[in-house]
Length: 498
Image (tube, rainbow, N blue to C red; front, side, top):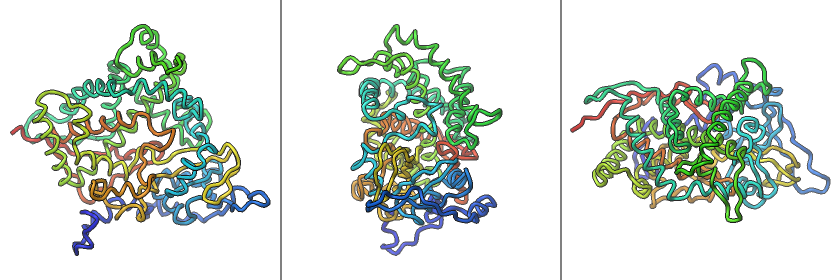
């Protein structure tokens, strides 16, 4: 269903209208949702503007004591941010977990933070993930961030990425081929999210470390999951049985794992990212110390396999919902295979898969794996005429931009053609589509992540067909990087060999 259907007199299907409504409007069909919706508003002001200022105060709903609006976000994710935007505009108070925060949404307001006044804002991730991913690239700022990023770029050169793609392709194909018995029309229901998560950790082990994760796979997955879940822990202290303590324990596991490998990686250079970080030098001879390498590896592996898992799961979900697009992507992949024979694709080959590229971009629009950015005002400043005091945490809810009708035609619909050359709705504003962030902190691994998702999706459509019932809606959870609360069960049917 494309944007012009109503103009042409065709009525959109019920599925097209309702498939993604939960991303825009908070649902009310569950007791939890109804209870959250009935909580009374508690209006509050962030800070009074200084005398003589022409700015206005940031206002909003302080929500529950201590919890604020945290439960609403963990339950509704983007629908909660959309509701705040509609009610209070582009700048509002967003109290959560005992901290008064500023919520910024809409392209022009975000542009002030990321563009016009970017030097007024440092990174704000420490509050959420600092103890677990300390001194990862995302947590550095200004000149120090620039220095570290310049060195890290040496591990993300085109030649290295081509080598990684050649190495990961057979790993992905062999792994995915084992998910369903090797006979025509065999079927198996797979919980796609945890299954892909294991695969992407294996890929990360091979690509980033040149090791077989092997028997430590479960331990490392649990450590990364504990670290990411700890960021939104309601009890932010190390108490027995709490997410915060589990995150600290997971951090220790990861530190010990990477530290043990350091001497070997320092001794000899190899094509993997770990070795690349150990041997990378900036133009002026700057290098990473051991602690920096370990910190960057922990953050890179988390970012690489968590975000890829969410995106690959979203792509598979939408292809199951839209069999016409699944068939288009499959035909494109099989055509590439016919051209290449048994050889692995290059980055250029994957870039040439137009339909797959459109599907990935549309899936990232609807469910970006990191749906917001975090900043902190380093001095008194303003956003869209609102007074922002120094030290105020600022949350950039860019997923709202992905869902605004003034930027996108029927934003609730899965419509990959909106990214096609004839429409290019992503050009409606420079911040209309920003799943990899923007500015100096734009994701350094976005190209690697994109071709990894394409490699996984290509292997899926090559081996299997799947269909998702029209009434099924992915129950996304937002207590960490977005994930399906039911694990995304999908019945895969092996394609006929003929």
